[in-house]
Length: 521
Image (cartoon, rainbow, N blue to C red; front, top):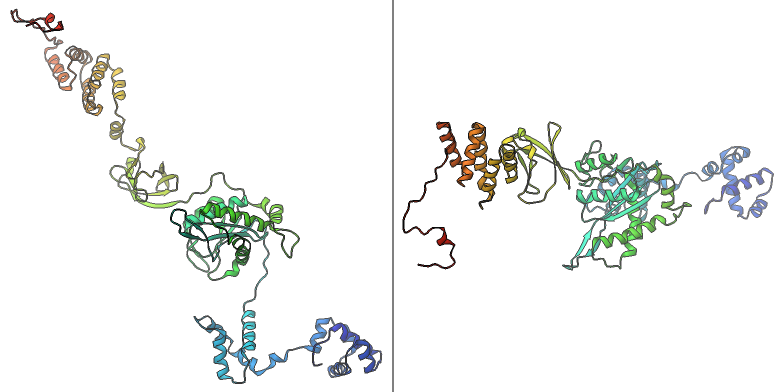
């Protein structure tokens, strides 16, 4: 039976003709094979010592095992030697710089009559592959989203500097439909990683149940096979959209084989098709990538009667979890001490935010996003501010201040005049005249506070009489009003300033003198 093995259907015909009592020459001519081949099969039948009916009842693979079972190559002593050293070869190949050729050179030095390089590499590769069998997985629609960054980058030209800026490419796919998404981002940092995930969910129109990222730093802080430490920002993102995180094992690309294959397809259907185009900003580069990835999803798959987009829209998209109305914003965390001025200092923005004064001297937790700053104490939110990027500025809520400070900040001419209008019209006239005197308003605030203090300490008739005296004398100072009140309290009567007539004198010019347009001496 040397040479090429005959198909089992032909061997069964040979058995049938033999059972009918036909001669070797007839069988060979009828089946179109040589007489020696017929003789070798008949000899094999005799050596098996089995009835022809039993052989004919077997399926083709079982019958083939009887006639052609076993490969002589695997019974060779050289093969047995390689099997005994397989663990050594597998460990050596993991070492830096060790190749199959180097191992073969060492092998042939020990076994001069051993396999050649091709056969040695074949048997070694076959055994190593057999040690790591692959598993066929089934996927549930809208359950998982695989994400990864492509190994090669895309670039655009900075119009100001002429520099070619290389950017990583984020790739994601839903394993059930193999529906793909790709976007170019500036880096693999957490901010850009979260931005890419948000754009991916918007592209899909919903969120999956499980996110399967690689062990990049933006997703996993400390890798562990059983309990990896995840990036808090990514956890917040997934909590916002109700997604569970399931990172792959370290150095286990098979855990996300579909997105690894998707990266290869992106190379062929995106990278290759835009390789000769020039881009001058990230937005135009992403427009081109989105156009090509859409065509990729609409391309008919080779071994399936549909395209990725058809399967996604018909089965998977209706099962995605609807997105929340407000998009996710990255949260940052700090623990800060409340200063004596009941503000905390956020160093990243060099800005101050107020906290209720009762927490002065205590530590509070600060959680801030791009737009909001929230402050917590013992799990209770005690303050919230719009985030400000004014360097050295203060974001202050008046209610956070103590009453004394609130009064200090609430001072204004209108504030004092409104208070005076409720007390006395004469006091209101004094304050109006004081603020109209031309001095800065803040210089008059203490005088107004003094007036109000005198009002609280003085009987109303005496206070109003003192105000009238101040108006008549056009003297609006606190000290004048205080002296007037003291005199009235001592005498018990309003004090009127007597008008002293001018003495008669010949040199007095009189009011007519000052009314003339020209001076007459």
